[in-house]
Amino acid sequence: MNMSKSRTDTDRRRIYADLGLAALPRFISTMDRNEFSPTYGCANREFWLTRVMDFPSAIAQFGVHGLALAWGHDMPSNRYRNHPKILAWILAGMDYLTKIQHADGSFDEFYPNERGWAGPTGFLVHAMIGCHRLVGDRMSPGQRMRFLDCMRLAARFLGANDEIGVLANHHAMAALPVAEAAHLLDDAELWGLYHERMDEFMRHCRPEGWCLEYDGADPGYLSATVSFLAKLYRIRPEERIEQVIRRAIPFCSYFITPDGHYGGTLGSRQTLHFYPHGMELWADRVPLAASMADRMIDGFASGASVWPGLQAERYFVYRFPEFLEAYLDFGPRPAPERRELLPYERDPFVQRFDDAGVQARKMDWGYLVVNLARGGVIKLFDEESGKPLLVDSGVVGELSDSTVFTSQWIDDAYERDQTGDTIRVRGRCHKVPTQTFTPLKMMAFRATMLGMGWNARVAKELKGFIRRVLMTQAERMPVRFDRRVEIRADGLELTDELVLDPGARVTRLKIGDDLPLRYVPQSRYFQPQELEVDGYELDSDELARLNRESRFTLRRRVVRGGRVTTETAV
Image (tube, rainbow, N blue to C red; front, top):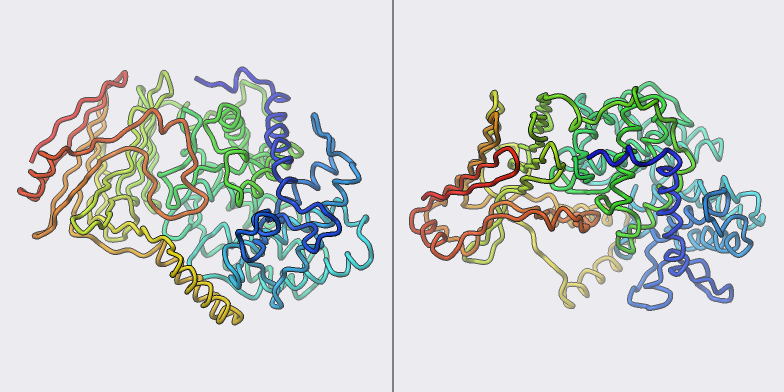
């Protein structure tokens, strides 16, 4: 089951380089490489070539960092090392960014006048300063002056602002580039702003090891936070940074599953990505980080985890530089006999994270993780094969007015109980936002942003409104759920009971399956696990009984070896 035993450290390290470099042709294809073009250096192909965008999304320039890493370092099969054309394109990409910066220092990613904070401005400052370390001495005096002015202005914007809605990884990715800019520019004002940003970030960190992502713990973005903090620690080795990293790494480890997947619907933002660079930077300090990185490398290689080539055009630019950095900073591994076991490899245990609402449990027949805070989302794996026995995102249904509802939401009003071998959560289902743009809505939205987005305060409030509508608003539905998990010596019993309020009618209902429903752009990438799991959908007779009696119970039993039995009752 442990595939890492079949690979040497050299093999593992090369996987980072292979997957990172494989993205370079794709990224270069997104760049305008015509030096006579007014958009020379722009990496948003949909703007400069296909012209389906009415503004250049600045985050596309993040990939220039990956290009610089390949140009500046020896790696296996690296055709880009020290190539003069690659250098020219790096400099063009860096210079183009200075041309699309707002007067307040910010950049746009999703729409005109967005004036994004950490995303994209913080990410871009970090990436561009990384480029500067490698090619800064190749810049012309004019390029260098424009670049430094751009970085100073952007860092001040990051230090003096924030965003609506708590995303801890964004706070980490504001502190990191502000510190990098302060270090590069030797700017005392920026160091002062850095301390303010770090103080704010620390307020969103929990003693259990996780950091707040909207309203809960998200393993995918927590691995990103570890990566950002580990980078920061190299220039600011503060004790508080070390404490967060040392707590976060063990917390993350419980979400690596025996089949090589990570996170997903167990997290508040449902993300599947695993940022490896922080684990590599800390592999010599925290041996568990090396074990985690090795298992995820196997997942990347087998397609069980999200690698850069799988991600959408907007997001692969974040990932392939991370893989190249992980190759360059590949950490020392302990001797095999000193390797630290991942949670699913250990002897039986129960680990509760009460604040996060998460329980991880190793039995002698399987590995279980449940997130009660998200309505009892559950993942269960077989001890011998490592395959999923049960992957269940909870209740998903549709009311007679076409409103979609689900139990997989985070609600402080949920009643959660973890007593002995019983895990229970109950509460009301929540509405799933399903809005999309129509041509008329898009025209109105663009007109609003063009007419009012010039004002930074208005732009911030509008972005906060969009997040509330699409991501964080919580509207309770006339459907109550009660989920009970009972762990036994030979298996597990999962019971779901649904109760309708008077007058409520359900036209479709499914319990189970791996169905992420929250709007998060960096989620919902295909994972092979999806092909191995399914849920239970009520047929027409069962729906009629539910609507008539206002109650439905589904009981499933998973026994050692993987056999699943199902029974229903009204």
